[in-house]
Length: 522
Image 1 (cartoon, rainbow, N blue to C red):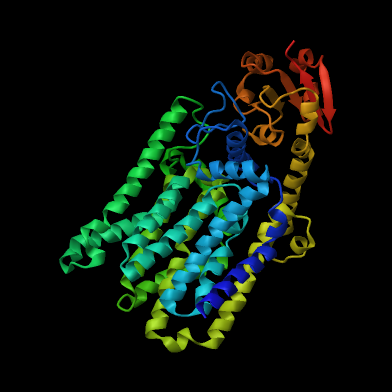
Image 2: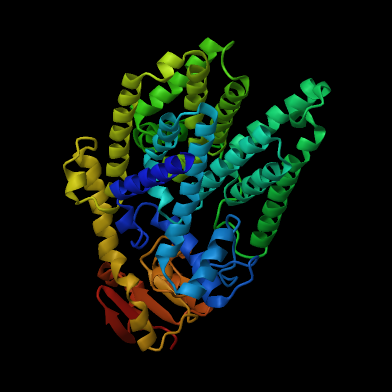
């Protein structure tokens, strides 16, 4: 019976995936929504693949003065995908598929946890699918960023942690911490619930240690400390590695709310309310979730105390994270992905209360029908938002009443921009090689204000306008030439109006669609 329920839930995940357009997205190139960060992730992976780099010495295509050596999060996914590319060939869909599997494993783990707690397959399926209706989770699950996989690992770690206490098993306990460690190494934001569990465990030991039970033993504490030590060790290494190589490419610190003035805080808040929150979770569903959280305190004496305090601590942790990284929320919605860990907690806690104290309500078929209908609506909204970021001209998106025409027009403009200026780079590599330009021959790709987009897409090392764009125009080309740049690659003819470029346009060696290539080594 349980196996059948597992298969049904997996089938539901695949059905939602089809609704979200994953069957097409899986084979898509990096797209315009955060294409900058997507290309950074892919660039690290491609350099592992092409250069057989040491795991602890990652690099990107933008070389700077240190051969491109820099590190962001713990590169376990990047390195692993590179090894799979060596076996199966260079296919970006393998990267996307790994991320999807990590998130789906987390959602399946959440389903199993809820089913074991509630003894009800229907409600157990509702909870992870409710979480999966999040627009940012729908988008970043089938993507290249590490945030969604970190969330998936965290959910898996929580399930193993639950099994450890249910079975009083050291095996499951240690396995849960291994998963938490991997999640935290990928994204430190994924440790919000881990820190909450740590606080609860310290409380158990201090105030209930006299019980001499498995869960109150002091030995339960050291795995927490080992995980924190592992996270500290990695970030110490990463900070040292970047300080001796390309520093400042990736954020390894905080950008708190108190680091900017009132006017800047106000502008960011407008972005949060107008764009980031609706992308984080559908607003009516978010309000419902917060209302469920508040209602827990009305039933304080009947609520499962563990889940109540876990929900409270995670909520406080999410607010704390939001304040510590407030400055990124003018545009970087993916920073919020791991804050989704809060979403299922009030539902689990409330349903557990109904299951134990109000079974008539818990089993009410009309309540279940209503919940199912609401979930279908939320998943449809999630599908529209996910598809809109890839296929804004699809009728599925265009005819939806849940997005306004202004948003659709904005995504179409971004799609057209990338199609105009970046599309040619997706297939230009064989042409560059036919011109005798090797992968390690340094190029200057302009205009491109990102770090790696055009460089990664054409599989070329060199420079974009990142940093270089801040150098005065009359010094720009000579500066990159001093680093060994041999070729100038221009993807926008408007640049030819710039007088400073004229001396470097004498040796044109090729044209590919909207891209012109010049030899500037003379």
